[in-house]
Image 1 (spheres, one colour):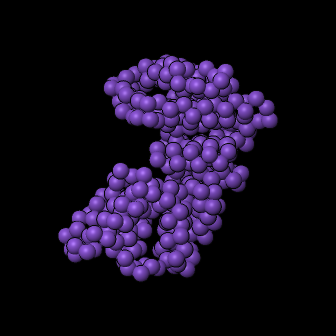
Image 2 (tube, helix red, strand yellow):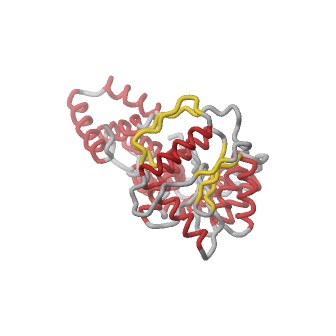
Image 3 (cartoon, helix red, strand yellow):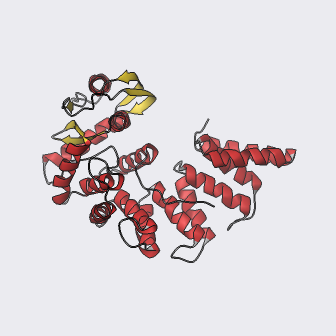
Length: 339
């Protein structure tokens, strides 16, 4: 299997993390598009959490733009949030944009349905190459350069969310010069405060050797910490380490356990990896029907390797194999609500 360490920075990964943390009642961790105010014992922390939860609760039936300016897209969300916020005594979410910071050539094109406001805002700011912070209960949209300064101030005060965000900016070279050493430093500070996204990203740097020594033992340690908090990308990464035997004895049973946990959260790479394990008989009896079912899920998620495996299977399978495989695929599709 060709498996690579994944960092938390993609839309799907962030959505998964936000949903899990809000449903569990935890503070929402930050990622590529979301940041938060410094931790404090007082109104700012309460307002931050309330604003995040409100933006997750407000569902836009449709967010559709074609070549809209950043200001137009954000105003749509601001006004729409007031109309769609049904909570008693609530008046939507205030969004503040310094138009001098907005890229003049940004043109936002989106077509989303039934999307939480938080996700729509994240898509808009990423497309505009901006970030947003939550301060005093309001969303402030900033340029990457200004966001980096804001993150640094908060990170130096010990805010784990900001430390993770600053690490990610150094990791990706957004608003600052790319610097893996700095990225690793800030990820470590947040990871030591038990931030699961930072733990996953720090593990990935130990895994790859970016920003410091390559160390599979440290990678395993930090992946496990994040995986045990339910982060699907970390569960996949942990499964990949056991699958390959990197810094640990190769253990297909343990690999399958972690791939399954991530796959059940909709993690496409893990679904493909399970398909490969059943196809090859790694730690499980060979089962082409089960392999086909997991490849089908991964293919629905856009995995081209899964699509290729499905094509090969359909050419070689007997009618009986096809019937059993389609039945099992339908069961998984129904379980994960994939049409």
